[in-house]
Length: 142
Image (cartoon, rainbow, N blue to C red; front, side, top):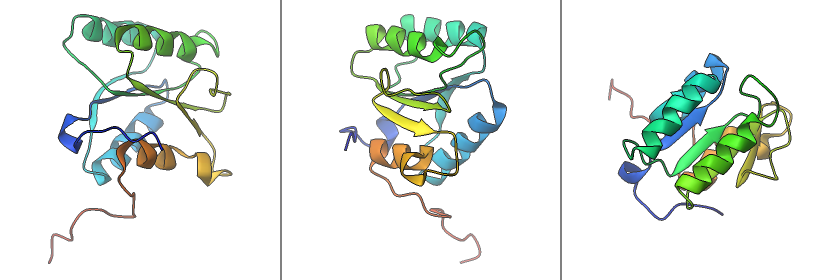
């Protein structure tokens, strides 16, 4: 288990993914876990801006969810992960992709419904120590 030794309020999670669907879906999953995204990028240009904020210490994430292909090649994510590790050596990287990410990510999450053991939900549960359920939120009618 790669669980981070901190409370929920200390977790800063960012995401790099060209697909708005995955950014929205992960934000919803994080909300169910009592968390949220602190920043996201959808292409190489917005990735550079997000990394610039980290370089300037405006944002200090401890988890990054990164798609391998950010617009140029399947190696984009690996380059982003390397840059983040240079800036924040203890950052945990979740490689979320249909491409292989085991060489550069701490945890691989596959964009597929076929392997639930390598899903983004399992990766986030491992990182946060939280359990995702259909709804972790209380029923407002109660």
